[in-house]
Length: 169
Picture 1 (cartoon, helix red, strand yellow):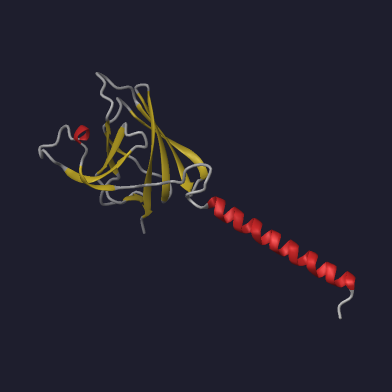
Picture 2: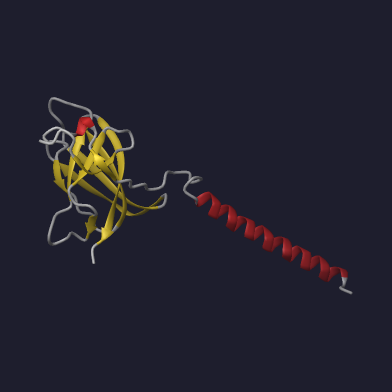
């Protein structure tokens, strides 16, 4: 038969272990994509017919290709390299054609602030890029593979999109 003090310590230790386990489970559950406080990085490359508003300049009336739409739908990133690679490949460029859904007589520069993301966590320092004259053709290289959240600013507009860069071995 156990002594009363020992049974109490054993029950208290069991309670602490269960409480810690519940805390670990709660932290894991809260970090799940559906429960995260800030949105996780989602790079969704669509492969098909481009949106009508992003087709200007193509000879095919229904051009197809890989593209990513921004969160608010104001910008499309048409990918001429699929996948995008980091470090930069030697045989081709990470070319992206930026097409604004919001039409303007003249655009201000497209300013890009890119932040590497792991889930909903920011990793490292943001990287800045600028396209003189606004949306159009570009070569955008990122310093590391992973998912990058691009904050886009141009002509009074603001939008975001996520692009994944694959490790170039």
